[in-house]
Amino acid sequence: MMSRRRLAWVAAAVLGLVLIALGVLVYGKARVPGVADAEKTLPRLQRDLQSPDPETRSFAIMWLAEPRHGEWKSQLGPAMYALKTDPCRDVRLMAATMLESALGRPRHFSEQERLAFLSALLKAMTEDPMPEVREFASDSLPLPHERGESAAFRDQVNRLARPYLEKAVKDGDPYVREKARWALDGLGEARGK
Image (cartoon, rainbow, N blue to C red):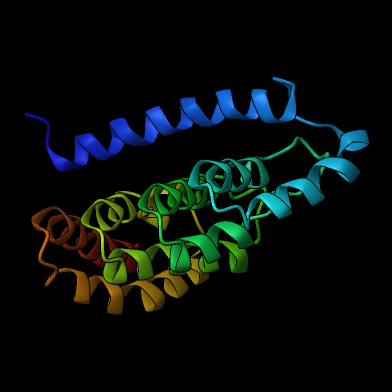
């Protein structure tokens, strides 16, 4: 029997494959749209965020959030909004996936943008009604000292994350509690560096 965490990962992977296939069907191309396509593609993706179909919303979040090699900047506002408000668990999982991916790309986003992404993940870890989303958000927590971040940025992360992590160690889900303890220990190590 699969654990809930493993099941969430499998579901996210399957959803990703379905979304890629859906993208090819909906947009008629397997390639990433370029600058010439942006005028047509971006408005359509913005409309897709309002779709009643969760797969369409997930695909739009994924497509907007992916880096486009300078063709247009990743747009993560929809992912942050969906993580807070979308009624579908799978859409919230996709949003968390995109935010986690952005945290791992420090060259592409300012420290303030990355703090906003981290804040959205921390809120999901402590406030989302679905344990799978809380678990995934807790898995997504980066420790800035692992990535060679500046001392000032580590301090901002510590101040932002500590209250959420202290709340998460009391979560009803044992996996979330464990990850929160691990992250709190990591914050303590980062303070010593």
